[in-house]
Image 1: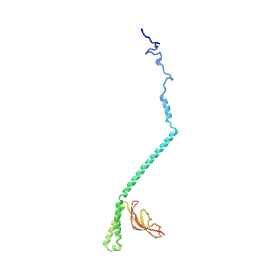
Image 2 (image 1 turned 60 degrees about the vertical axis):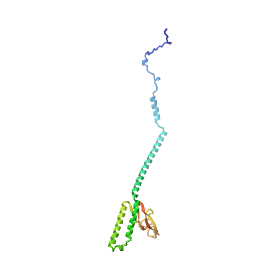
Image 3 (image 1 turned 180 degrees about the vertical axis):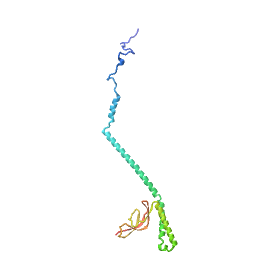
Image 4 (image 1 turned 90 degrees about the vertical axis):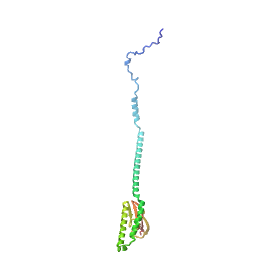
Amino acid sequence: MTERKWPPDDNPRGHRPAGSAHALPTSSDAPPDPGGAADSGGAAASAPSSEDHTQLLAENAELKDRLLRALAEVENTRRRAERDLDNMRQYAITKFAGDMLIVADNLERAIASIPASVREPEAALRTLVEGVGLTEKELLRALEKHGISKLDPVGERFDPNLHEALFEVPDPSVPRGTVMKVLQPGYAIGSRALRPAKVGIASGA
């Protein structure tokens, strides 16, 4: 005896009702378009608020300020390095130059120790003094090539950076502080005193 299904299947497998192959889904059956929603949402999200815009401007200004400060620091570092290098080149011979000043002093003293009245009659002595004088000039010229200059400040305004005052000379005819006499010449290397000149200055009225 054959068992029958109840209720009977009116649409057996493999058979579709007429016209079902051409049926189109209605608008209510169509799935929502995710892209359209995303576009509208993205447009709303991409538009920054006034607060966000203000914050971005503030951050940009801060970054610009940091950049300018960093560039300024780099430039200052470069200038300091150049200045230190120039000082090293200029003042590297300071100790050697200080030792050479003793030689220059001795040559000057040797010339000054022989009065003109004595050296003139004696040709040999005169030649010797002239030779010592030429040696002194050559030494000073060599020192000048390396930035070392002799200080002989008679008539100049007293400068505590370059001069050492040992006494005062009462002379109302010149302004107070004028260098009147040099006991020992000074020397400068660049703008720095290698040895201050020992001087006497006017005390004024």
